[in-house]
Image 1: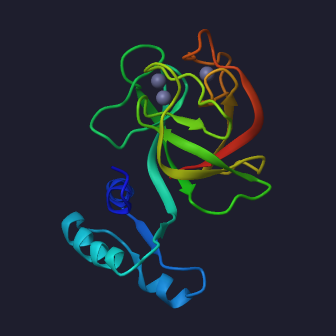
Image 2 (image 1 turned 90 degrees about the vertical axis):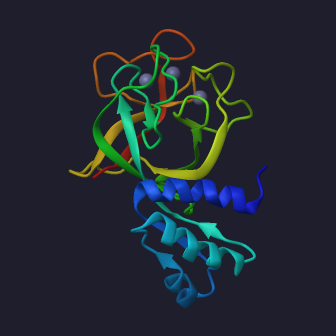
Length: 205
Ligand SMILES: [Zn+2]
Ligand SMILES: [Zn+2]
Ligand SMILES: [Zn+2]
Protein backbone atom coordinates (compact mmCIF):
# COMPACT_ATOMS: atom_id res chain seq x y z
CA UNK A 1 0.00 0.00 0.00
CA UNK A 2 3.02 2.24 0.21
CA UNK A 3 3.87 2.24 -3.46
CA UNK A 4 5.77 5.31 -4.59
CA UNK A 5 2.63 6.53 -6.32
CA UNK A 6 0.35 6.18 -3.31
CA UNK A 7 2.96 7.77 -1.07
CA UNK A 8 3.33 10.57 -3.53
CA UNK A 9 -0.42 11.08 -3.70
CA UNK A 10 -0.44 11.41 0.06
CA UNK A 11 2.26 14.05 -0.22
CA UNK A 12 0.32 15.70 -2.99
CA UNK A 13 -2.80 16.05 -0.89
CA UNK A 14 -0.74 17.75 1.76
CA UNK A 15 0.79 19.88 -0.95
CA UNK A 16 -2.60 21.14 -2.03
CA UNK A 17 -3.24 22.33 1.45
CA UNK A 18 -0.02 24.27 1.61
CA UNK A 19 -0.53 25.69 -1.84
CA UNK A 20 2.95 24.76 -2.93
CA UNK A 21 4.78 21.56 -3.71
CA UNK A 22 8.25 21.02 -5.03
CA UNK A 23 9.42 18.03 -7.01
CA UNK A 24 13.17 17.58 -7.02
CA UNK A 25 14.59 15.40 -9.72
CA UNK A 26 18.17 15.33 -8.50
CA UNK A 27 20.77 17.34 -6.65
CA UNK A 28 23.04 17.40 -9.69
CA UNK A 29 20.61 19.01 -12.06
CA UNK A 30 19.67 22.48 -10.94
CA UNK A 31 17.86 23.21 -14.19
CA UNK A 32 15.64 20.16 -13.84
CA UNK A 33 14.94 21.12 -10.24
CA UNK A 34 13.75 24.53 -11.35
CA UNK A 35 11.74 23.05 -14.21
CA UNK A 36 9.95 20.73 -11.87
CA UNK A 37 9.08 23.38 -9.31
CA UNK A 38 5.33 23.62 -9.52
CA UNK A 39 3.09 26.09 -7.81
CA UNK A 40 -0.31 24.51 -7.45
CA UNK A 41 -3.19 26.77 -8.17
CA UNK A 42 -5.71 24.19 -9.35
CA UNK A 43 -5.66 20.73 -7.83
CA UNK A 44 -6.79 18.64 -10.79
CA UNK A 45 -4.61 20.39 -13.33
CA UNK A 46 -1.69 20.26 -10.93
CA UNK A 47 -2.18 16.54 -10.42
CA UNK A 48 -2.08 15.87 -14.13
CA UNK A 49 1.09 17.85 -14.64
CA UNK A 50 2.80 16.56 -11.54
CA UNK A 51 1.70 12.99 -12.29
CA UNK A 52 3.43 13.19 -15.65
CA UNK A 53 6.54 14.46 -13.93
CA UNK A 54 6.36 11.53 -11.54
CA UNK A 55 6.30 8.91 -14.25
CA UNK A 56 9.37 10.50 -15.80
CA UNK A 57 11.36 10.24 -12.56
CA UNK A 58 12.69 7.04 -11.12
CA UNK A 59 13.39 8.63 -7.76
CA UNK A 60 11.36 11.65 -6.77
CA UNK A 61 12.17 13.52 -3.60
CA UNK A 62 9.77 16.11 -2.33
CA UNK A 63 10.95 18.98 -0.22
CA UNK A 64 9.34 22.18 0.84
CA UNK A 65 7.26 23.66 3.60
CA UNK A 66 3.89 22.52 4.86
CA UNK A 67 1.42 24.90 6.48
CA UNK A 68 -1.68 24.23 8.55
CA UNK A 69 0.22 23.18 11.65
CA UNK A 70 -1.49 24.70 14.69
CA UNK A 71 -1.35 25.08 18.42
CA UNK A 72 -4.05 23.16 20.32
CA UNK A 73 -5.63 25.21 23.11
CA UNK A 74 -6.65 22.06 24.97
CA UNK A 75 -3.44 19.98 25.12
CA UNK A 76 -0.89 22.67 24.03
CA UNK A 77 0.38 20.28 21.35
CA UNK A 78 1.23 21.00 17.72
CA UNK A 79 -1.16 19.29 15.32
CA UNK A 80 -2.03 19.25 11.62
CA UNK A 81 -5.18 21.20 10.85
CA UNK A 82 -5.34 20.40 7.13
CA UNK A 83 -7.87 17.58 7.23
CA UNK A 84 -11.65 17.74 7.68
CA UNK A 85 -11.28 16.31 11.20
CA UNK A 86 -8.78 17.34 13.88
CA UNK A 87 -7.41 14.11 15.24
CA UNK A 88 -7.49 12.97 18.84
CA UNK A 89 -6.61 15.30 21.73
CA UNK A 90 -5.29 13.98 25.03
CA UNK A 91 -7.63 16.47 26.72
CA UNK A 92 -10.61 14.70 25.11
CA UNK A 93 -12.33 14.95 21.74
CA UNK A 94 -10.46 16.49 18.84
CA UNK A 95 -7.72 19.12 18.98
CA UNK A 96 -8.85 22.75 19.03
CA UNK A 97 -6.73 25.16 17.04
CA UNK A 98 -5.82 28.76 17.68
CA UNK A 99 -3.08 31.22 16.89
CA UNK A 100 -0.41 31.09 14.25
CA UNK A 101 -0.43 29.07 11.07
CA UNK A 102 2.92 27.29 11.33
CA UNK A 103 4.65 26.54 8.05
CA UNK A 104 7.24 23.86 8.64
CA UNK A 105 10.23 22.75 6.55
CA UNK A 106 10.50 19.10 5.62
CA UNK A 107 12.83 16.77 3.76
CA UNK A 108 15.80 19.10 3.91
CA UNK A 109 19.16 18.44 5.53
CA UNK A 110 19.59 18.50 9.28
CA UNK A 111 21.92 21.14 10.67
CA UNK A 112 23.29 22.04 14.09
CA UNK A 113 20.15 24.18 14.55
CA UNK A 114 17.53 22.06 12.78
CA UNK A 115 16.48 18.58 13.92
CA UNK A 116 14.88 15.97 11.68
CA UNK A 117 12.75 12.93 12.52
CA UNK A 118 9.72 15.00 13.45
CA UNK A 119 6.66 13.33 11.97
CA UNK A 120 2.93 13.55 11.56
CA UNK A 121 0.96 10.93 13.51
CA UNK A 122 -1.89 9.42 11.50
CA UNK A 123 -3.78 8.52 14.66
CA UNK A 124 -3.81 11.77 16.68
CA UNK A 125 -2.67 14.23 13.94
CA UNK A 126 0.03 15.49 16.31
CA UNK A 127 3.69 16.21 15.59
CA UNK A 128 6.00 13.78 17.38
CA UNK A 129 9.67 12.83 17.45
CA UNK A 130 10.42 9.51 15.81
CA UNK A 131 14.11 9.38 16.55
CA UNK A 132 13.86 6.86 19.40
CA UNK A 133 13.24 3.11 19.26
CA UNK A 134 9.72 3.61 20.63
CA UNK A 135 7.16 6.14 19.45
CA UNK A 136 5.94 7.70 22.67
CA UNK A 137 2.35 7.75 23.81
CA UNK A 138 -0.50 8.54 21.43
CA UNK A 139 -3.81 9.88 22.76
CA UNK A 140 -5.47 7.49 20.29
CA UNK A 141 -3.77 4.54 22.03
CA UNK A 142 -0.32 2.89 22.11
CA UNK A 143 2.51 4.72 20.32
CA UNK A 144 2.29 7.34 17.60
CA UNK A 145 2.20 6.17 13.99
CA UNK A 146 4.31 8.18 11.54
CA UNK A 147 3.47 8.99 7.94
CA UNK A 148 4.32 11.58 5.34
CA UNK A 149 7.03 14.17 5.51
CA UNK A 150 10.22 14.13 7.54
CA UNK A 151 10.06 17.53 9.22
CA UNK A 152 13.34 19.26 10.04
CA UNK A 153 12.57 21.83 12.71
CA UNK A 154 14.70 24.86 13.63
CA UNK A 155 15.86 25.18 17.22
CA UNK A 156 17.99 27.46 19.37
CA UNK A 157 17.89 30.32 16.93
CA UNK A 158 16.42 33.77 17.68
CA UNK A 159 12.65 34.09 17.59
CA UNK A 160 11.36 36.63 15.07
CA UNK A 161 7.98 38.19 14.21
CA UNK A 162 7.44 35.13 11.98
CA UNK A 163 9.05 32.42 14.11
CA UNK A 164 7.84 31.47 17.61
CA UNK A 165 10.11 29.93 20.23
CA UNK A 166 9.26 27.93 23.34
CA UNK A 167 8.20 24.82 21.47
CA UNK A 168 9.61 21.76 23.20
CA UNK A 169 9.85 17.98 23.06
CA UNK A 170 7.79 16.14 25.67
CA UNK A 171 9.71 13.28 27.27
CA UNK A 172 6.48 11.51 28.21
CA UNK A 173 4.46 11.43 24.95
CA UNK A 174 7.28 12.40 22.48
CA UNK A 175 5.04 15.16 21.14
CA UNK A 176 5.89 18.79 20.38
CA UNK A 177 4.16 21.21 22.73
CA UNK A 178 4.20 24.92 23.59
CA UNK A 179 6.08 25.68 26.76
CA UNK A 180 5.31 29.39 26.86
CA UNK A 181 2.47 29.33 29.38
CA UNK A 182 2.55 28.86 33.16
CA UNK A 183 1.00 25.40 32.75
CA UNK A 184 2.02 22.69 30.28
CA UNK A 185 -1.21 21.41 28.79
CA UNK A 186 -2.38 17.81 28.84
CA UNK A 187 -0.15 14.84 28.03
CA UNK A 188 -1.30 11.51 26.62
CA UNK A 189 0.96 9.84 29.18
CA UNK A 190 -0.90 11.53 32.06
CA UNK A 191 -0.67 14.91 33.74
CA UNK A 192 0.99 17.77 31.91
CA UNK A 193 3.70 17.57 29.26
CA UNK A 194 7.29 17.41 30.49
CA UNK A 195 9.83 19.35 28.49
CA UNK A 196 13.43 18.60 27.63
CA UNK A 197 15.96 19.29 24.96
CA UNK A 198 16.04 21.92 22.28
CA UNK A 199 14.11 25.17 22.24
CA UNK A 200 12.33 24.91 18.89
CA UNK A 201 11.57 28.10 16.99
CA UNK A 202 8.80 27.41 14.51
CA UNK A 203 8.20 29.57 11.43
CA UNK A 204 4.68 30.86 10.86
CA UNK A 205 2.82 33.19 8.54
ZN1 LIG B 1 -5.04 18.82 21.63
ZN1 LIG C 1 -0.40 10.06 17.87
ZN1 LIG D 1 3.40 14.93 26.53
